[in-house]
Amino acid sequence: MAEKWKDRLTDQLCDAILSLETVDDVYRFLEDIATIGEIRALAQRLEVSKLLSEGFTYPQIAQQTGASTATISRVKKFLEYGADGYKLVLERLKKKG
Figure 1: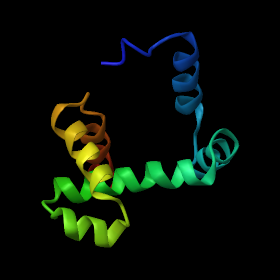
Figure 2 (figure 1 turned 30 degrees about the vertical axis):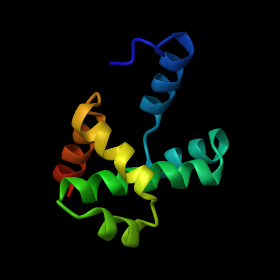
Figure 3 (figure 1 turned 120 degrees about the horizontal axis):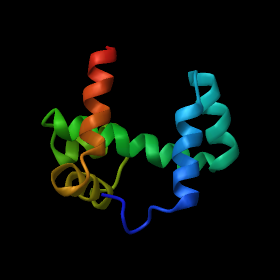
Figure 4 (figure 1 turned 90 degrees about the vertical axis):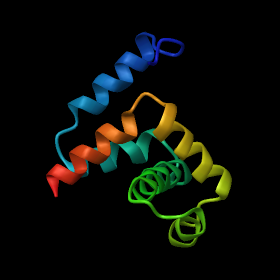
């Protein structure tokens, strides 16, 4: 999984994220820790992963999200060969409804 980059600092970041209790808490933390562009890029990748898992084509995804084909390809690669983080989150978001 994350063995190559996992360390005390990334553990601390994960613990910080887990400590957040509300959507407002998350917004506040994200606004302080990342640029708006970085946050939007993460949100876009999540949407790309959702659309890929629903069977949308690259052109459809590019049109709906504004993502480049390189970004779509990268997300698809992680959906297929990654640590299953996208799959985990997408399943949980589906259950949340």
